[in-house]
Image 1 (spheres, rainbow, N blue to C red):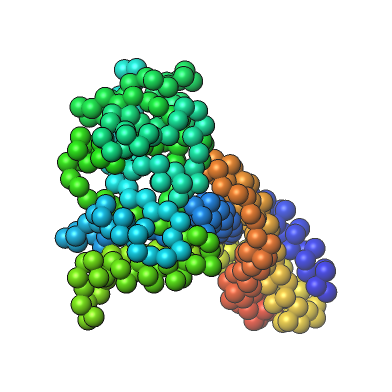
Image 2 (image 1 turned 45 degrees about the horizontal axis):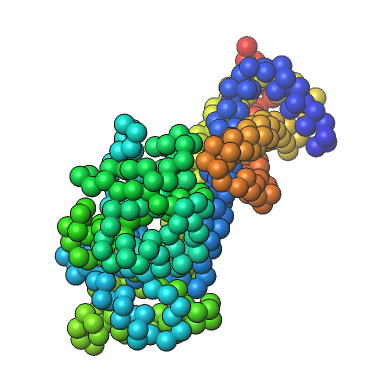
Length: 403
């Protein structure tokens, strides 16, 4: 009987193809939206995880303040970090391989009559060491250039593309505000970072150069601390925290006014943010499914009204209420399930295109696809039950009297 009901339902859908297509549209959009949001969210999370892992599992970041979730940012009204903090960490904390103080500014740089808005990082060669980042051509800074705050810079591959259009930039000048620096090296390509920025769009200058000639202050916004190995991270983190509390004269009942983050914390924080965003977007997409269900209920009520005489004849010749109920319930479910199937295909297609555009992995989850399809079927059962029950409870005599 079920197979016969499905056959009748498909026949009814086919007879009113355009109306059925429009009815399924809500479910189709809802399923497609859920699948594309979740798939793109998982792809982005995977990309973020890889980017965080690429920073180094033995890396810590020390930053001032507790407010901002963005590494490199600082809390308002909180004392900044100093170069001396980095030197103290390197000198007093055991199992530390290298420490790099950094400061950064976002500004417009000019070369070859081309303006380019990018990030300028003030640091020294230790920064490249902590990030395990090599120089592809040219050289790193010389000690004398770092101490003197010379007007030299190392640029990322993205800056080369933007300002030099493939030409050799070594020895060429770049204007940073009123300062002109000479390019001495080009960094290896890194690609996108865990925080959404392109790491190749960066210019590195000696820290003293940035402080004296661009930012005008002596503080630093971030200190990178590379432990000797991954197993030392927890101990190094505790020791750095204790040292920073001592240097910032915090009493036992005062909270830290700085943060020491390891890569696991950053990965967890980003995963949480991505999970919340994906959940919110999926919830919004889920509303489309409910709207689609209401559309199915509406069209099924109209269908029952149009087919009242047909229902009356079936009941009059011996059909049971349960059979009529099943027929219309199956018809609503088939309508919703077809919308779900189209939505799955559409959602996967949109996800693949979106992943390619955003340059994140395309990682479809079979469980999400099954859940979306199952939910679309439930929408059909839930919203189709009321019209089906109305059809099953029709009085055969009254139904046959209606035009």
